[in-house]
Length: 436
Image 1 (cartoon, rainbow, N blue to C red):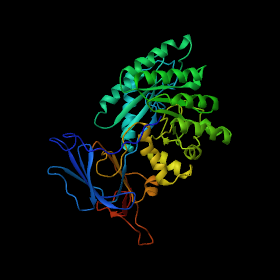
Image 2 (image 1 turned 90 degrees about the vertical axis):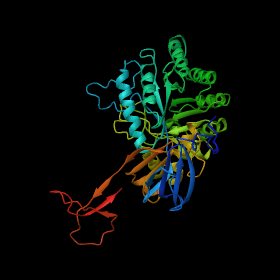
Image 3 (image 1 turned 30 degrees about the horizontal axis):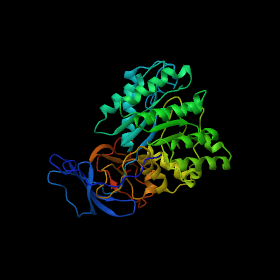
Image 4 (image 1 turned 60 degrees about the vertical axis):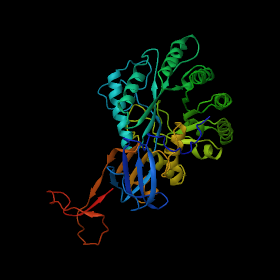
């Protein structure tokens, strides 16, 4: 079943307010409900929220002026592919095309996985779940590389790998069954699988759920979700597993007749199975496209989160890994309200990952994203400048400035700021500067 929402708990003695705890004041931020507030962070928690100008920093603490920014709970990335990320630009034949049989270079995987994680962190995702292939031909080389990436990111963001074997059934699947058990024993690794590529999808499912139950870890299955019989089997078995069960990207569910898909969605909802859709495109198989039927799933009561999927690999050479783009696509093409769309990449994504809920209220985790803008719809449309807060400290900043030439018609154009530096040859001539 999917993870329950956790209520805010006061920080333990010394955890957030004790000696050595860092403090940060976020001043003059705007919330999604329109309020202008100050937010004081101590340690990894929000200590206080008050009207703008009412709070001061803790002695010795830092202050960040968020005038002109919308302050939101930080998004999370529930479905990335760390081992293949950023491999589309590799010179020569693609060595990381997703094949389980191609040997991999652990150092190269770690380099690309780290770069991809930092890119997604800069977008605002302070927690990531990344699917990583394990196989008889490559062992746990890619997984070990991603685990090293996780350690190197400590304090910046949280990275959790999903060990994804291809073949788990029959005599041929014996080695990968052993690899999956070895992978989850290492700690902090989710049990994964790709039942669509196994001759026995139901047996594949049973093996993954059994391993997850044995080790008390969640299960996350990469599937098109186009087999209603398999989905019914999944729903029947998922209720017996104490940890969360997630499937995605489930684009194939949208290709089923609506009444068949509706019954499958109801079974998934009753079993507490969460679905991660990928509005930015498919992953894993280069020919797989489309998006899960988000409206149908939500109407049935299924928890639906949104992820990025492929990031510049053989499946999607132009992926961005940006949760706000996923939310934008859900709002512009999926029919969701901006608040619902952002919830799919924030509250719902965190719930799928088993993380505590975040609100901009006292007592909640200090996992926040400030984006220049006044309203959520505008932020999803044009989210350039961002400030990312993880565990109560700023871990990433992105700034964007657009410059324009002065209007020849001398129009009284609205402007946020003007440049005072000398004009550059051939560049904007003392025109307005708009920070985005």
